[in-house]
Amino acid sequence: MGELPEFSHTSLESLRQPLEDKMVTISRVSGTVTYPASFMMVSAMNPCLCCYFSDPKKKCTCSSSAVSRYQKRVSGPLLDRIDVFVEVPSVEYEKLVDEALAQNSSYARQRVEQVREIQRERFKDNGFLCNSEMGRRKSGNRALWTKAPRPCSKQQPNDLTSPPEHSTGF
Ligand SMILES: [Zn+2]
Image (cartoon, rainbow, N blue to C red):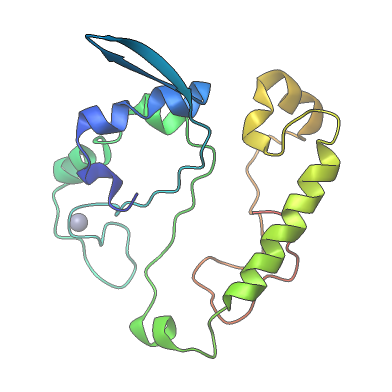
């Protein structure tokens, strides 16, 4: 879902149930039906309407209230159901189109397959594959919680010069 805040409030809020319960319930005059709805939601949004809020190279032209209004279009309860957030700084056009710096799809697939294999082994006795399926109780047994957040990788998201040194997770 690109431009997440541009979707209607009703559409965004309707994602809460399937994200939480992995089921979707549709009610009509003739009856109510519940379907399985386990999916991975990947979405993107700009930090503000002009796209340059917190950009180190270009000044944002939005007022602080406009930035706040734009970011609040995505509700807290919906944000609570999203597992991973990554802030991605802008990338210069030359870097974006430089094929020598790009990762090819087969390399990306290989990394995904490695992580899936780790997860298959990790959760082999649990009947699920993803961290998001662990729930609070199970994650407490498996996750090492720290007081301060640490970066997942030394490589910054805008550094497209080489693949990460270690690719054991996302
Ligand atoms: Zn702006």
